[in-house]
Image (tube, rainbow, N blue to C red; front, side):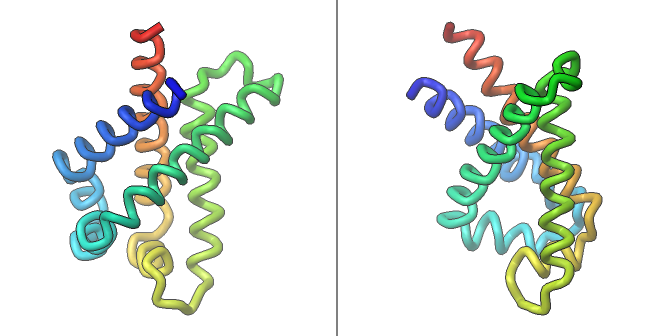
Length: 139
């Protein structure tokens, strides 16, 4: 239960600073309209979706770090960053071939792969680092 509370604090702190404070995604992507649609118009669905997806990305990264012996000497944050890049690339390959008008199809077709992949990896790693810091400080 404690980990869920700490993850929630880390997630909301990072998301609100990066998205709503620094407006990082708007600035690096130049896609103000799409970012506004996702994080402002659809906040009640986007934030819970991101909460779950980012948590899953982190858990996959931690699982890979734990079970692949060759990665033991690499920091968990690096494995989470690379794992996030790979997962976002897989989503990109799926959505770029769709003919739908879904948000993610429009997002990937408009922005390409690099910006979303780096952004996702940065957000996931940042949430993990803040979570790790909070966990260490509350132990």
